[in-house]
Amino acid sequence: MNNIFYEKDGDPLKIKFKVENGVIAIAYTIKLSERDSNKAVAYYDGDNQNPEDDVYFLPIPIEQNNERILRLSATFYPLDLDLSKKYLIKLEVYQRDILLDSIEQDGDLTLSTQAILLFAKLKIKGE
Amino acid sequence: MKKCKAFLCICLLFYMHLINAQEEINVDTLIRNLRLNFAVPDLPAFNALQSDPGNLLRPASPKEFSFIANQFFNGNNIIIPKSIAIEIAPIVLIRYNKLTLKDYQKNPILYNTRISLGTLRDSTNISHLAIGFRTTLINKGDIKNDKNLRKVIEDLRSINRNRNEYYDQQLIKLGKSEEYFANHPELRIKFDQEFDSIIHNTGQTIKDYKEYNSWNAEKLDIAFSFVGSSQDSASKHIKYNSFLAWITYARPVGKNGHILGGFNFNSYKVENSTYFDFSLQSRFYIGMNQLKGFVEGQYLHKNIDNTNNIIGRLGCEYHIYNGIWVDFNAGIYKGITHNTSDFVSSFRLIYAIPGNYK
Image (tube, rainbow over all chains, first blue to last red; front, side, top):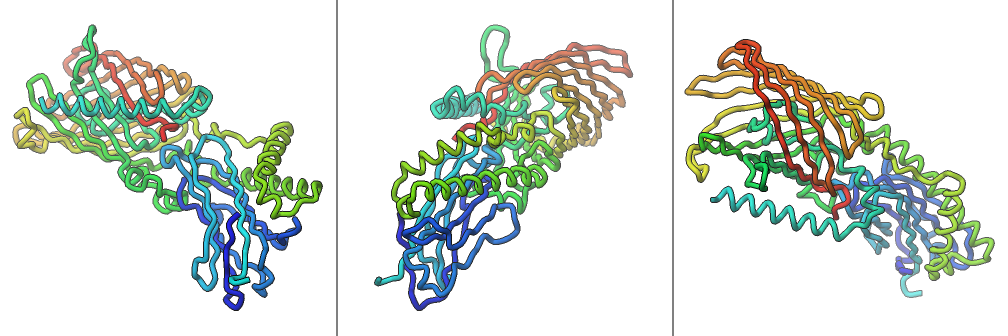
């Protein structure tokens, strides 16, 4: 699991879901949870067909997000294997519009429903 | 000689492509993915060379690369084809592995636009070179159009939501934390297998959306092509010869039928005079994607001798293997004005990159 470090006294954290490669239909759920439990602090749902930007602000005060875990699960389907044969899906974490880090997965598209599951732990720098 | 070398190069590329494609697939995926290899594509640059009497330009789904050759078999041996053409989707090739749904939705016509190049050496040893452009304006068989896509997204949202709920329920049941889940990938595999089994048993398995990808969907293509001719073997000093334009509309007839209607315009120069031909065509396919028969009728008005002609043909097309098609047809070309009749036939080999090629 990746650790993503942020400034304790900085701006709120922002996450951005992105499909960087692949002509696919995709639905995703991002779960923010406490490290030592499975209880959700927040859920963020979306897909790549709605007009929204797939950008979400994490709860404030931001120090509460220390040690919290981001879980990205996405289910997708290739729309045209003639246009793209590979996918690249990313979840980026920003603070004051500066990219802190990201988690991502790439792979080959097949003519079936595919799913990915990615995790990252948020940590305050220096703690 | 140059034409021969060019043809050998194309054959080599074609063969390498085929080998590469074959390495990547197994029988199960092949059978499923063949659904994407819809129909024999017609290439504007090929049709513009008029090595085939039919003028109908059949709508087809865009492919990054297609190849077509006519008269490649002389009855005993495979020979250098009389005419060959290739078609590419240039923007798809340029943006290969950088393309997303949002990119495509911003300008679908751009991604559907294809360019074709074709050559023909006729019986008087004159070389003809054609360049063609084609785009698809309507494609109801495209899963990417809004109505189809909304249904797919709804399914995906439902499955993804259920999958997440299943993860959460299992974590609670096992008393495991999110961090434990993150650090134990075997747990994820177990949960996914269980979840897939549950949705399969409850009939909620995601569809393969084949109904959106049917070979006989409603389509509208437009295309145009320029043809130049040269009397020397190196195809130097090419002079403008003709301009052709097509519009073709296709719609399904039941589950196994496809009817096409088209119009073709041809402007050409002969000894400093310009002439205009036009033709109306209709073709009806019956069968399934891998094997279809067709019947075709065409009316052609030739401006140069002010004659009216009709063509009637029967034919079939067969998907041999992984993007390779053959098309055979035969019929009668009848000159109404002078009451003449000729037998016409065509045997074509076509290759288009199959959907499963990586």
